[in-house]
Length: 512
Image (cartoon, rainbow, N blue to C red):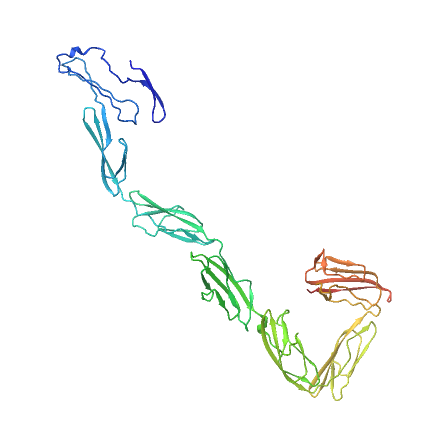
């Protein structure tokens, strides 16, 4: 019996079996019986392990005798001397039992595996390999950039007829639309199942923007030039009027837009609304005639509350006193936009009259208003044509005096006053710290008793209150400056002169 031998297979498994050791062995029975027969002679058996891959059973052998020579049937098996692939076209690696083939051209290729036994006999097996052509490697071009909220098309730049193209986003065809960055792959497959592929990296374009600034006003006397302010590699511009410069001179108000484009094709947009500067429509009053010796207030309408008016002589303001026959010119300016206009003044005789200064009356009192101009006619505000009227109520009173087709109006304001305290309340103040009108408070000519002064915002919230008539509101609320706007006040006190409680209400406007 052969002894047991243990070994480890290439797969890592441990195996054990009976195995003959190398050496010289005698048969159990002598071979003397062969003397004189054709089998007589010296037999040599050689064992070679040429297949390192099996690391196991090496060979078997036997003898098969002619039954006429020996009554029992015997078999004889030759050993394997060599087994390998025959080197052939397209074979790039040959390790004996394993060959790697990679033909460079399509076609039919035959590869032979040959086994040589110990008797020198060869046994061949052929394997035919059909090599299909590879499709042309698809070309997606260089890596590219996609813009935010935009869509681009990826294309196979070298499409081949009869080839199917499948994209990594699940779509098929020679092109695909994408709207997100990332890496995209396309696989080209022919009818034989052979494939080639290409990939492209699509990066997100960032840090680009374009701005035309805030909405603005159009100045007719100095037309605007719209400027682009942009971030990033923006090299092309397209305006709403089709121009392609980085700036746009405009000739009227309107809505304008610009598109900025990067070399990679990303677009950014901005729109600006340009409205008419109020100065563009500024006009002075129509030419007029004034009466002789009259300082006539030539007043223009401000095109905007914040506009300024400059007259020909350097004076400013919406009103200019005129008393000569000439052209009077003024220039309106609003945020740097100017427009000049003029009014012609002619002189004619004026029936100048005077009905007095603005005045105040007490409850229950009257004030006579009189006027006289020889040969003139009169018309008062109340419709009277007499030379005098009696005023009993506070109001604005005027009289038109007509003489020689020249009308002169004089007027005054009659107000009602508290004959005891003469309470005066301003209607605006400017708490800006310049020392002028910084505090809002009423003034009196008496000593009010049980005094209470309260200020409310437009929502009815109490934001200031004092009982000291010498203390006023400084325009703050909870330690912060109150917004510009209108506020409401209530003033209560006891009038000791009239022996009654009095109350004043009204509104005040904060100006800064």
